[in-house]
Amino acid sequence: MNKKKIVLKIGGSLLFENENKINSKKIIELCNILKNIQNYETIIVIIGGGTIAREYIRFIRNITKNESLSDIIGINVSRVNAQMIISCLEDKAFPSVPKSIEQLSLAVLSGKIIVMGGLQPGQSTTSVALEVAEFINAKEVVILTNVDGIYDKDPIKDKDAKKYDKLNYDELKNLIIEESDYNQAAAGEYRIFDTVSLQILKRSKITVLIGSGIDIKPFKKYWNGNIDSFGTIITEDYN
Image (cartoon, rainbow, N blue to C red):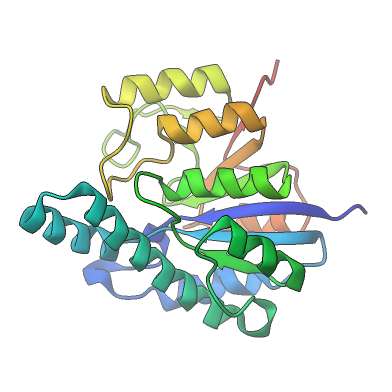
């Protein structure tokens, strides 16, 4: 079996429970899956900021009205989250969090799992995941979030929301346009995709799988090579 390069983005929402308590059980469960690296040449994990980051961002925004500073705070929190995952992965992980593509290029040489947070203001962690995948020539990005795929409406708020099993880039673009009149999310605003991440996706022609990190069983089967996809799969053209 040819080993592959893969980038996994873990939404910060999966790391915390009510009242911002660390979800220890979920983190340990995810790390135990990731430690099975036999199918992979390179594994890079991107961690979101989650509710903790949004609390900091809300405060900084209200005090300073400065979106760039709010972004920087969110990036720093995502890096703390990344260090927490590194600790859980123990000797399977590269011991520090790369803060740039240059630092990442050196960390890759270790052969260990690399865990990162955000990189720069104005860039979501989904965009980071896609940029990193493009840099290491990975063919797939997996995004774990608190829903089991992409829907036409928010499935948490609307029980009639329809899940998409497959989307191409143009269909994803239409969904993003319908979702917001803005081209870029504000600091800390949660979206699985924005227009920046779509631009990277289209130029890199990466396949993206988006699925649940709550019910982890489908992802575990995928990670261990027992199924080809799960959740919603996004490709350049599935026809």
